Structure formats: C-alpha cells, structure tokens
Image: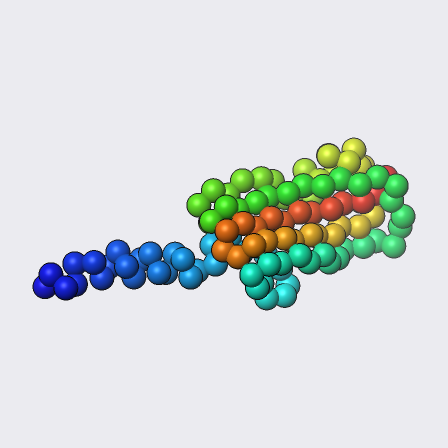
Length: 105
C-alpha cells in the first residue's frame, strides 16, 4: 500500500500541469506562444474612438480583469459602437491575456 501513497497527488499535479490552465481563448489552437487578432462584429459605420478591455490569467490560478464590451466602450468614451475586435496573447501554460477592442463614436 505504501507504493500508492504518492499516486493521487502525482496524478492531480500532472492534471493541473497539462490542463492548459492559462490558455488564452482563441479560435485557433494555442501552442507554446499565441498572438492572434480577429474580428467579432462590424456595423459598416466608421468610428474615430477606440476602447480596450482586458482579462488575464496566470497559471489558471489568478484570473483578473473585465473584457466586456461595456468596459471597452466606457474606456473609449464610445456611445455608438462601430466594430468589436479581439486580441489574444499567451505563453502556455503560464500566462494568457484576452482583450476586446471596441471602435465607435
């Protein structure tokens, strides 16, 4: 029975280490490093103001931020939204960051 004493902690540690805790959300698979930009929505109107809102994760243990459209809109002092884009960066499995970029007037 002694040989199994460290089995459960070892399995739990391996599961956490291999789970991709800090994987940044992206429509493409993440590798060791991710840097992706893409569009979410566009209205066809032009915008002269930009607002950004970000959320980040460190090892999946510390997750902070507010990457909501409303926060990005307020950051850019935008009343009419013209487009919404995202930017994802990360270094697997240590750090992940996802930002929402809103343009408008």
